[in-house]
Length: 159
Image 1 (cartoon, rainbow, N blue to C red):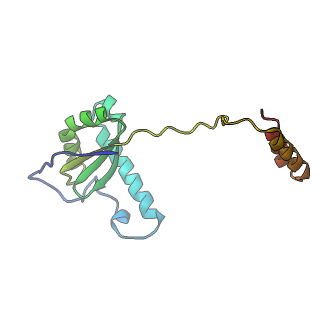
Image 2 (image 1 turned 90 degrees about the horizontal axis):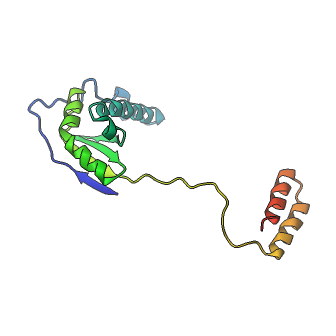
């Protein structure tokens, strides 16, 4: 993972976190439980949509707000090229965040390559030996569960 911290920017009119963009009180309160976690995730999701509206459509589709940490906006992108393009829009994002009531001064962009989902296809490997096939058939005959028996027999018939 590559992390880039972009230049800090100060505003003479920095506001506190109170306002339209501030997290709900349930999140601000140090309450235990899943409710506050869900509320924060919903707040971040709404803020993500709000902030990405200020970006060009192509760029907005390639980034996502991951966190607001004190005076930092943390965005994720899936390639270094999008990191560079997002850097060019730093002022726009920080202004949009300020308009939403946040007192952020720094944009952090992390490059996180997309993970490739594992395909549930057939597993390639060595073919089963005759002894293994016979063992699977014998085991299948001793199993009472018809579904398990069918699966064992299916395995025994693999090349």
